[in-house]
Length: 389
Ligand code: GLV
Ligand code: MN
Ligand code: MN
Ligand code: MN
Image 1: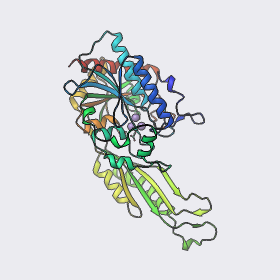
Image 2 (image 1 turned 45 degrees about the vertical axis):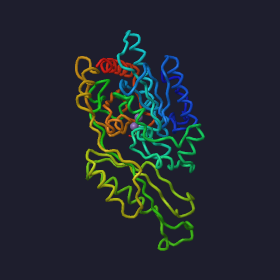
Image 3 (image 1 turned 60 degrees about the horizontal axis):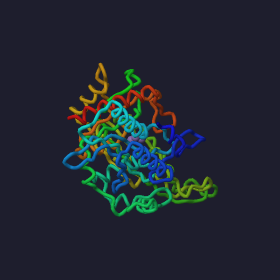
Image 4 (image 1 turned 90 degrees about the vertical axis):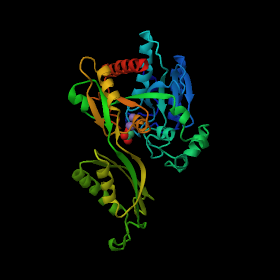
């Protein structure tokens, strides 16, 4: 089922995907989603924030549905499974339920959230944050991409009413329970020799932008003593982040840097660096950022508090999805729309499918066909159970 979209946003040089929100690739994926919904006779809706919903049955606030799905956008040069596996597995699970002759007593929905990765505008889980009100509409509309286009510009060009984004209680009220299936982004299931697991928690995490300002000047004629080179405090910050993270037992990453003006023969005038920090405890995550702030202007781009998934729902999923032995229950350091919904009070849970490489946000991310099938069966079993009670 991933085959028909395998070419969309593919960089043939690297094997990686570039699927920014509201890009041409994203629009093609949205059309594919609409086609999959239509082929199954599902009722397609797009909410004010660009999230897509395909319904089997007609949900209402008095009769909310059981929803499953994930996202179709990607980090830059990402793998084929992070996001899309959850969407295709959702459609496949519905197919399996129909094949089993199940007629669910609650509406079942397939969801595709907009801009989960935040690759373009910097804020992850934008679609679900807007939906739940965790992100203010005005702030979102003013976010800019690398070309200086705002989200408002980009959505308008895509034919959407940008001014209407924001908290959407009507759509939220249709979601009785949300289950997101996702490729595992580490080695937990490989180590335990199990194809499918269940999430216990999402570790607290955030993104911060560090701006180091100096003075651009000639690389050949400016004496070292006369320089104000922002690359130096930036470099110190990267090394300090690593040391600080080791000390505090958290992880810290600088994966994106912008050097301006970007001449090989000039001292830069300005370096922007994005720091991503995650860990078991929010206090250590925040303390690391405070320790590093020294020479830079620091701006918080996103913050996601710890998510502890509902233990009763989690244990139920582990029993239903595990077959003879309950599925392993694992925490994750990756952010997901299911976490945003859980924080907003929607009973939510996640299934993970084994990733033999343990690698994610990279073309090396992988899932074996048999494990994907086990994931679909587990998801169908879970949906069947949840739609009965
Ligand atoms: C998204 O995948 C994130 O965890 O950053
Ligand atoms: Mn991801
Ligand atoms: Mn994902
Ligand atoms: Mn994610």
